[in-house]
Length: 510
Image: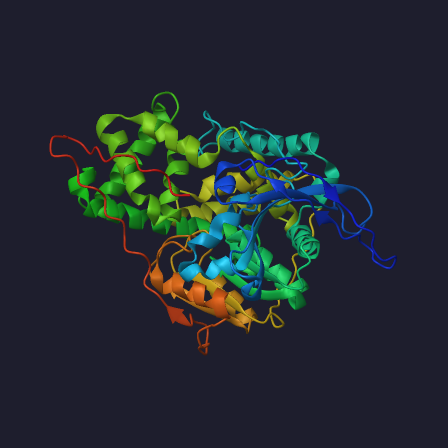
C-alpha cells in the first residue's frame, strides 16, 4: 500500500446557501517510491463521514496526482481512477497514464485515491489482522464440526469489526458514499466534469456515479464490468463457476507444456495431480504451512490472470516434483496480503451494507452446495469469504438502480471468460448505457488488466482518450468490436540438466 506525507487541507469560505463546504487539497510530496518516480504529488481531502450531515464529522481521503504533460491548450481534465475491490488502494493508479499508447494519457491529470476506510485514508478499517493466516479450517465443510467452526469464525470477524472500528464509518461506507466522495473530489479539483477509469468493482462505482451525477461525466473507461443485477450474493455464486472453468483451462495449458512442467500430458491428468495434492496437504500441511486453503488461494490467481500462468506452473511443478513448499508459501503471502486485513475489512464493509444479504443459513447451504456440484474448487472458499455478511454490524441499504441514459460516452472492455466479473455483466451494462461501446475479447480469461500491450484494445483506449472516438454501436446484446486476447504465455524451456522443472520465478505482475 502506498503511503503519503501528511499535508494540510484547507477549507475556503463558501456561499451561505451551500449545504456542504467545498474543501481543497493542499498537495505535497509522496512517500511511495513508485509515486515519487512518476513525479506524483499527494494530499488529503476532508469529506463528510455522513453526507446527510455535511457539516458534521469529517474523514480524510488520501489522494495522489500525476499532472498532465501537455500544453494547457491540449489539457483534457481530471482522470479519476479506481482499481476495484472494494477495498483496493488506488494511489498507484495515478501512474497509469504512461501505459496508454501514443501519449494519449499525457493530456490528463491522473488522480488515484484510497476510498474511505482504505489504506492511507483516515480512519482505515481493520478487524482481525491475521484472519487469513495459516491453520485455517478446510474450506469445504464436509462435517458439522467444520461448518460450525467456520460460522463461528465468520461471526468473530464481524464482531471484531464492530469492536475495532467506528460504527458511524461502518454505517457510511456503501458504494453510494464512495460515489459521493468522487463527487467531492471533482469539486475539490475544480473540475466541471470528470473522466473516469475503473476496474472491476471500480466499474460499479462508475455506473453508480453515472446514474447519480451524469451531468458531471465526460469520458469513462470501464474494464471488466460488474453486473448491477447481481450485487452481491448472486454475483459471488456466479464467480464460483467461472473461476473453476478457468482453472480447468489452466490445467489444459499446463498439460500442453508437459515438457517443462512434467505434471501430466492431458488436462485430466494435471487435474488429478492437483486434486491429489489437495488431499495430501489436507492430511499433512506441506512444511507445516501449506494446506488445501493455501493451495486454493494461490491457484485462484490462474483463474484471474494469464500473466501469472507461468509463475504458477513453475510453482506447482516444484511443489509436486521437488517438494518445494517454500515457493508456495511465498506466493501465498505475496498474493494474500497476509497480516493486513484492511482490504478484506473494507470489502465486507461495502458489500455487506450495499444490500441486505440472505440471513437464512439454510439458503446459503443450499445455494453453495448446489454450486459446489459444478464448481468444487472455489465455491466454499468464496462462501466463507463472504459469510461475515450474515452477522455484519451495520444496517444494509438498497442498491441504486443503474441507469446510464444520460451518460454521454463510455468505452468498456471485457474478456469473455473473465471469472471475477463474468462477461454477461458487460453486456448488461452496455444495454443500460446507450452511449457505451464494448470491446469484447473472445476466449480471454484475464481480469482488469488494461492497458497491457494488446494493441487492438490499447489503441482504441488511446483514441478514445485523445479524441472521444468510439466505434459504431452494433444492434443487439453484443460487443461492438472484437479483439483477440493477448497470446497465451509460453513458459521458458526446462534446463537440459534438470530432472524436474527449474523455470525461474518471474516477478509477479502488478
